[in-house]
Length: 380
Image (tube, rainbow, N blue to C red; front, side):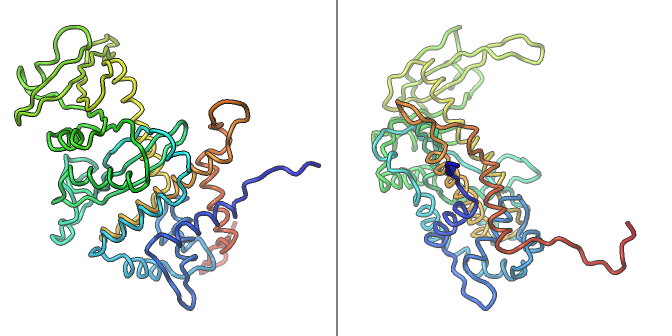
């Protein structure tokens, strides 16, 4: 028999433990608890989308959930969010393939909100206000920088957003982080939330090619006056601040509920690019890979009702780290044989397989509860 090459559950667990223990700002040394145990509980909770309490109840040889929460809250004070953000960014960049620094990349910056339902004035200082959804208008917000290289999608930087933070300052921070990692961004995609004159002016100043989705405003004037005719076109537009930009006006036909196709206009601001409207529309759609990344993120997000913003940020970053690790592993182990550029078999190592293997590795170490104590003997 020829031995088959295998990626074992223990290998995935060991890789995650090494990355987390080396970079994340959590270290425990106790009689029963340890740093490895703490991360194992988090991996168990993330892999099943359950709370820390449920994960500790399901594993036989771990400390109590109260002990885990106490350790996390002690080592993740909200006053040290900046230091924790730096450590999380180092963890996200720990396993980046060397190829990323050799080629120009497409990248996207986007925001992700976690709902907050409390009324504590001290905690409200860490939340951002937005339109109402899921029963609240207050959210803990992160903004991520996401790069695309062939079939690999990676989050390379993350920032926790305070309500006093300026959008352009966050963009500057994420672009500076990409320079630290020696990543060359050929084009940057941003959604409507980033389309303001300060961000556009900064992108022009640093000569960063970019495509920004632009909101249609006004009834007859404003950007709505560009939505005329029947075909897509390029033009110049001057904002009320006096900044003049290149604009791609894209006309699409979208079917409505009655199956009839109606014209829908899309506006894009172009910085340092001479693309035609059809190219802008086609290339900007690649940005929605970041939305897929957020959907995957929700599959490994530890459930929590903690009011500590630093702990919530840590758990979101931990989920991003898991997604990154899977993407890097898939890129290295699921390669299709043959000449030409490296390609990945999308069915060989799916995210569900990664999550299951990681969970089984943790359960093998600590054991799982196989019975429930009852006050009386059950009559089955």
